[in-house]
Image (cartoon, rainbow, N blue to C red; front, side, top):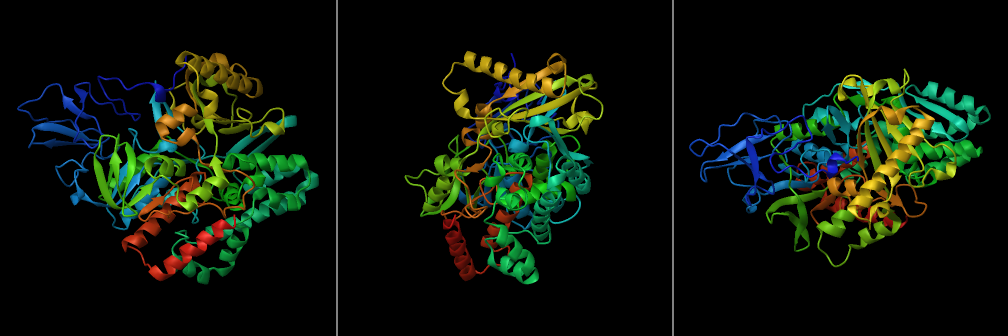
Length: 615
């Protein structure tokens, strides 16, 4: 029976980290109420009450001679020499107040934190889990290194302004080696339609129009509109749209580009496509293109979001980080610590402290309270306003948001280790499978997304093996109200059905080639990624007016900001990184680290709030 590593309880005798690091079994877990929400580590053998530790490659050791008890704090996944400024445990009072606390270490949260740290802010990132990254994290099992979420990495090129991951790493002095992917995805669609999205745009255009020669002009015009938007975005310095000095500065420098983006802001990809394309099969293909971006069809996908992804895959290309996606978060965490800020793991934030209408700190599960001038939540807005904030009523703008958007479904994820000979030579890295009926695109388990990152980086698996990472949409309601035995049985049945479909469509003999199988459900994602219902972001309840209804980083609570996929511009690696950059800029302005005009700020925020009411 398969069991996800995420659902395996940590052993009591040691601490398993999902990196290549294991604490020596000479250490055991013990509770320490002053350990900042962590379980500290006491050596089984101590000499004179002191510990002389071997350096670990994921954090540092601090010994409190006052109490003569060693107190380990996981301060950085990579740093072994960056210690806290004080020997006192964090969270015991306001004397250690930070400029900003970031709740969660997803890509959006880490980008916001590192950008602030570079500007001179003192930042503390609090991560519930043992490693950074959230859905861009990783775990190891039997020699396999699995990406928790998507293996399709946008924003990782060396040119333009939308290479936001590259820029975020460079800001903290980090650079990662990447492997260019010659394609983005291979579509396997109804009526045996097969379309490979090549890295080179002209090759992709030629392939698609060869399938639909009668729609060549319409296809050219639709993707041309995408390029118009992408080029406008790519020409601008990307910062907070809630900061008027920057916004007006960009408008005066690039008025046509700004007007172009304003024009497309309330529009959706499906509406634009229908201006130029009539063939329902081509429109269905564009639905599939957008579904990968937003988990909804083209009529519900903002045109700006679609354009970012549909063009960046050709402009900068898909580039996979050597060693796996988890290296991005590890590098950002290291860079954060190198800038003098901190990241703490096993720090479970239970609530945001609000005093006199202002967010001033957080309360951890162990009762510790930590204070900061600003609080940035990388949790979903449902978690932020429904769980972390203890209020009787939602702020009006959040109430409006939750009328416009609902939680997108979660995923059933299947990580497989397979014998390499089951894959044909020249197998593409990423595949999207929808076998029989276009109407199943958005139905739970209807379509399958598959990544094989070992096609690019063989070091992720033992020699002679490959990794298959399979996603299909699934609702948490499908996994509730059953016994543990029935739950495990259903995981097996559903996973085997998905694998059988891939075996029939792509890889004969797949089932018998499996050497390792890990299955995660929406309950898994909810538990370990701390996302309400395991959701991967917001989904419009009806047909949205593009991005008009998406909230920015500021909230109705003074001093509280949100970052990540439930903020403008939404889901996806580029989008959440963009959200992080915008949030850092707005917070830095409020801290006095960037230019600020209080009068213009107030006017712009009112204007943006009014625009959202039009959605």
